[in-house]
Length: 262
Image 1 (cartoon, one colour):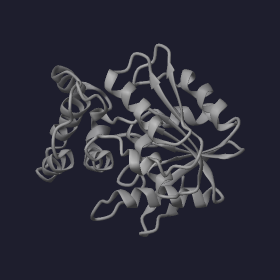
Image 2: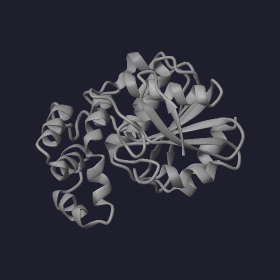
Image 3: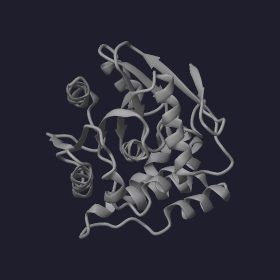
């Protein structure tokens, strides 16, 4: 494990794999170097790229700050890009895709963006809408010590899982890991804002960008990927056959490799 200091002095933990052009993997909600898809995706890309897998702030071995702001996470990515030599591509999954887009829009020197299903739920105007004030409601649950309730609220009310699945998840071996980073759900929902694609901001992204979605994902996520692609000048968009939000990494990795190596 290595660490790099972000602009505010927070230590960000990361691991480096492989060799070649630098690629930073940006996790979605509740995931880290020890839990989620990125530790499994890294070796699939490491044969052609130098892959950076990091703990977003507040997770795993990374530090945190007393108060949260989206800009701090953008600065974390900027610190990793500097550590990688001053330029890197970024791969983002779910809310990590939204964060990577925000970093590129803010001017972080990202050379290419490959993104899977940024969860802008409000893209589907006729479908399910996200709850109001998600960060505030999650923060209140965390402050009350109700971490399990915060994870359930995120999974059921925001993500849209059936209520019984939210309860059954408590029996999963990984439930304790989800509870441990439940406070960072405030961070992810802050990044997502009102869950509408910020088209004006993303119009500032000036690097080659690929937006991917799964054929079997909810309609809102497929529309979100298309809407995000439409907002980024020159962005490409593709739908992966048979895939859901929980994308198969052996299916995803070749698509990422082709785009990142172009």
